[in-house]
Length: 179
Image (cartoon, rainbow, N blue to C red):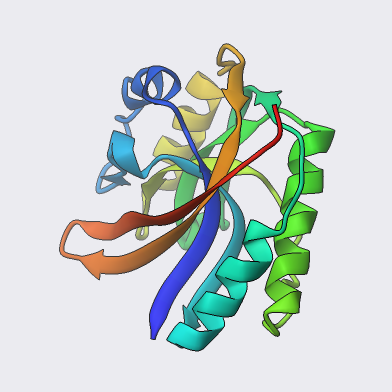
């Protein structure tokens, strides 16, 4: 079994300023620069033959390149169950189109449909029972976050595994977008 997801990597010049925002929440597990990405479709644990079918379906995606901007900040969970803080992604119809193409590829590989509403974001930290006022203060300090635009001309299939420091990712395959 291999744990997979598809995503757009955040370029280092966009990610580096995000690292300056990684403080102010006690016990937060801040993510390293190389882990910054915008998930298109979480796949989960699949057998190698399913991964091969998925790779084949993803390679068939034809979509245009586009520009993205990060905008705003937020969190997942409520109260004691807050489990992540993130940088948001400005709405971009071509991103949503690419996400839907990734969902179609997953279904073509006979994976179950994703039931959660798609909310593009870059996870900056994972949290475990954080001090709620600190999370609120962090969101308030960073809610005006707005990156310069960056060009997206590819997306990738990534594997994921757990380490002592958190999840680690490896790019398994890249898929170009039409420029």
